[in-house]
Image (cartoon, helix red, strand yellow):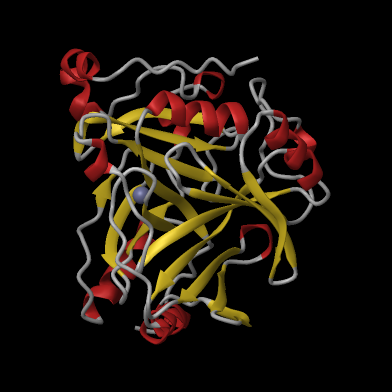
Length: 325
Ligand code: ZN
């Protein structure tokens, strides 16, 4: 399995995490961070719970942050996640150059605790916890661009989150994961800084970074509210994804069949430290079942769940997007 002989993966597609109260989650990501709710659907593998997708105006690959809402998992103590070894520890969003002072003021005005501005790899960033305790970083990275604008955004365009810049992963042993990322998946090594090795995938504005944090003493993590479930990397087409699947299988990795996620097609596998990776196709995208102006405005279900709409809806708590201008 040689990444130079495979179709290149253009960068990060989405990051998925677990949250508790979906309304509180929406209020944070839309009301405070200014992302767009681009799809309100259910977890296709567990239709009794929401799957919320946030992103830019049209839900472009690389801008997507998604949440599975665990609302029916008592008790709270065991449903709470814990970040630890062999897990994704944080998500970084890219904001335009010069906009961090806006974000400092915005967080302070709303009495949201944050740390920073701090410096990492010669870049300035803020660190904030979402309502379930997930760590979110905001880093200045490049000019305003892309498809950020839509009528309902709560953040002025000049300061708006541009895309998901990357993730940080904590691993006890860096070597196997780094070798996998570089030799199997085609990541470039941007350089080590202390215990953090920064890797990158994709070019230009689509460049996504993965910080590998080596911590041999890190306690085990636990999946649950506030924990990051997986990261998905982009494949341009289904054909590209099928070739990656074939190569991973040939190299001896356990890979799922291609799964229809309605807005993209996905395969899943674990990298050597056990973090769940996905490869997701760029298409068909979020306009497949809603008009651009209507994205996220109603409960979207795939055709195979449509017949169960009434019973599914009856089990879901009401979630209202009250942040539309
Ligand atoms: Zn996913």
